[in-house]
Length: 366
Image (cartoon, rainbow, N blue to C red; front, side, top):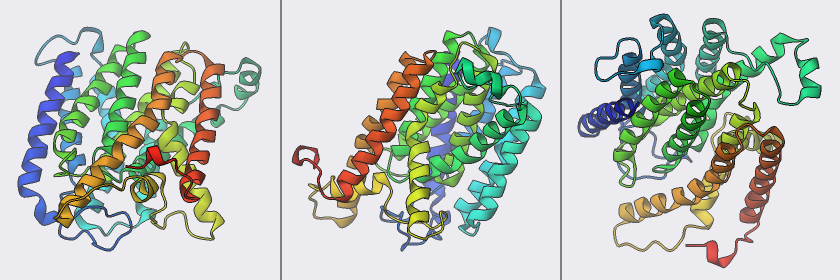
């Protein structure tokens, strides 16, 4: 297991280093006037390529362990191919957008939808219970309901991670924390194959972060966000489906930050009469950047932008950990997880409105 983590870290870091050295020519096409741009210079948005290569190559050891003994973590090659084949349509579409910046939102939605369809068809994913005994009896009457929820999870979570991918280390550190949390619970219930797949993703993400934070030499891009979203969605649904001891509300609370951020963003755009696919600069992390992170002084404008960018992410790391930590501690306690999810929604909306209305306490500003 540890070998899985180390190998994926090394492969991701090495491929990422090569992309940092030779990938700048692909970054020149990135528009300079888009609202989500908070960096100076041409930075490759191909971190997803490094992570995907590391995840695919190292997870293949679970078919035939070349280095070390994976024991109970070995999976049939057909299952591995199904998992990789499920993830690739979304990731390849994201990488194409990172290279060309010509793929509109609708084709990207279609590709993540294709990945979700493959997940349901090839892996048999379904959320077959709610965690509430009185409601599960009704749930079982409509199996398609659980399939639809699983489809939405795989199709939607990649876009949720893409939405929070705004500053150096933000989405990567959140994805790493969630991956480690899922791995910990998978190990608790003895789901070794799933834990090994997740450790490959954790190592790949850590290798990417070597180049992404704090210097911002490489960005995850759409390909990286879609990789995180697809793999974590598939793993979350599979963990609950395969292990009755795990509450369905465990991944709900664990993934609350990207999910709630996405749903709230859709709501406020629709309320303004805008399309949910239109980019803006009013996401929670962007408000933190504009109205809380302030005291950065440097003669060089690019350096000042980088430092302010870096100081934004820790605020969101702490915010995300308010869901990750309790989710891991109470992974089998549905009532506690439900209350935790409700409290996070309340905290998110309160914090957002507080920042928008310029009522942030002085001690939070930096």
